[in-house]
Image 1 (cartoon, helix red, strand yellow):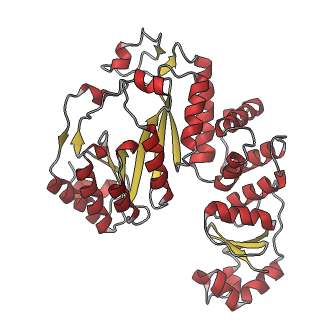
Image 2: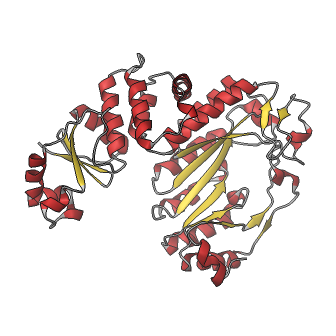
Length: 410
């Protein structure tokens, strides 16, 4: 359906593309399980159409193939072809984590950052649930390969869980959440079961006493294993996971909270945080990004479970400045240089060349408009350095430029 004329107005949108139809698996909640075979477009056509999208500078091509890597040789051929292109277009694929192998991972590891994006459906880590939905999954392989994939840091990895599946209580879902977030995906999507017409799970609705909406998309309301109140609580938690985890805007602070089990497990943190949001009425009002940081700062500062609260406060402030801000709201302690001190620092050409090479040669009065200095406790900077996995230098002073944090010696 895409040609030179109709691609132009939508080149900055998500382009949906199907290179195969059907799915060999029998997941009971999925419409693709009702198809009895898998059909593939010829590779030559796929390559030709990928070239078309690339030549028109399409922003993102989303393959809607149900399980893109079901034919691993074909998958390797397509990924290798795209890796060689080194283009600006992003390609999104839905894959099965346990169908990855070492050779495919080696191909992906060579991809330029931002070229590839993967969505991996885990859905549940509970064996009885997986059996009940006729989903064959090797969870051990998923953890092994997906963790390696995430470790490359060159592609966005998005994993899915589904709430409301049979045999999965609220407590069991909590376990699935904690085991999934432990592999540190870039995005964790909490979906809610849809009992679609024609699927096996819709036909088995009475077996598990499902209640669901009688209008599309037929979302679950409750079943024998999880109540409507519990599902509503999960919806509140989903909201905070999106705002705080999936945004990547609180990477350092959440890493500290999870690593130190400040409220117990990651799920228990979001559970407690959600209770706080509900008590304070925050869900009823829209929240700016700045307000999200203020809420996190207030909540964590009052938490008796937090070891070294000052450390966490420092990391929340770093997270805020890493978003590209060049000032601090009143709820943060501002430990910056005076304007005179900052100006003198930026007049030092050797300092600018070493720490801010992109601004080298520019007059200090221009550079000062684009950076922000802040003092932090050295142990907080040491911890941030470990979390981001890059060398930030030594010293307690940092300068921020377009979200990058540069540690200044001395």
